[in-house]
Length: 475
Image 1 (spheres, helix red, strand yellow):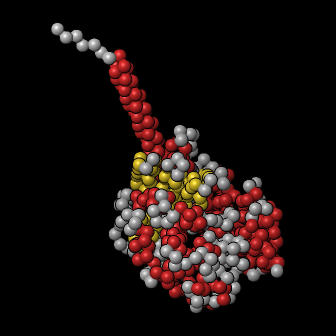
Image 2 (image 1 turned 120 degrees about the vertical axis):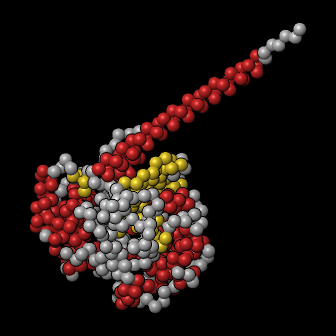
Image 3 (image 1 turned 60 degrees about the vertical axis):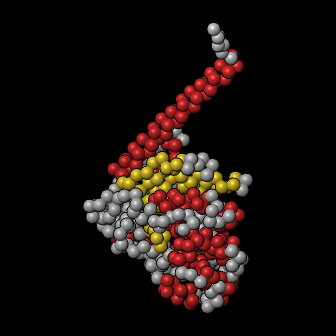
């Protein structure tokens, strides 16, 4: 007869394994339950946002490299007969400039250009100012190129003709910031000149292909298949106003692939990314806005809008979280919705945005200024339950900018002055004064412009843009 005895050491190891497995299962179940609860709350936010009329579009949320939530809300066009689907492409406005910026850095890594090269080296037919403007000025909007049109409906040929006859820059390159699409246009022409390829072919070969963005197209026609068509709050179709070529149109999943490709340094190096992210104080870089700690990327955010399209991408590398929102009915609430989603993921309190004051008053003010202002005052007095007045100063400034872009200069000035009466941060008040100066400058009144640029500089010592333009006016 044989007697078997358990080895006490083996038994302890066995029990420890069982304990560890049990702990793992518990933690995994807890994590899964917490994630499911977060997804449920995100979906609730998106449903309410759609019901409130502040979001019509597609959304994607990723955490730790996994898409945890994706949804489509609302309609694919103004007819309200076709629902949105995840595969539809959207115009993403200024986010597109990331592709031309990365294209420039690719050429620098190939040794075919340097950021300190003058624009005239590659486009010698341009006037003398092109000898002072360097490529680095184009990618961070400090070239001094003015906005020569109140809107952005100029075609490529019109833009080149305007640049060919431009006599002088608005300021010395590198000293101030103007967000102007001519900078993007020149980057695209330089890419074509150096590569010998069309801009679309270059981006497809060196960016879209390597990033596996197989559903993205450049300048995809709006009458073609697979495009979400833009419309306004009254469900009227919005004509696409952008005349310049080179716009990348893509579905939400491809924009997510882009953030992962870019931030893992697969198309350009970490050093090139860091160089491309340099911005003038208070202004954007070609990558929108970024934050670094010890030279490591913490987060990357970019918002873009164009003809009632709007998109925002936010990627926090440190937390490994990405949120992307794309809409074909611009409601100016993508940032607020994004913030609510991020709060949910952190298990923090959140609020769902209300309707935009700016969006509801801008067309009314454009049609009839006095009636538009009366409408705004009525909203303020009687409808704060439905409308968001948390950044009233900003709404008025944005409405003034809307008029300024359409050369309604006197009315824009009145709006900026009305905005400046509202108690707000020094930076926001300074910006209102700066835009007032810009409006007077467009009117040809340099003395009045100088007064407001000076007010902007005194209100916010960090407003280097206003200070630089003031210095130019005082010469």
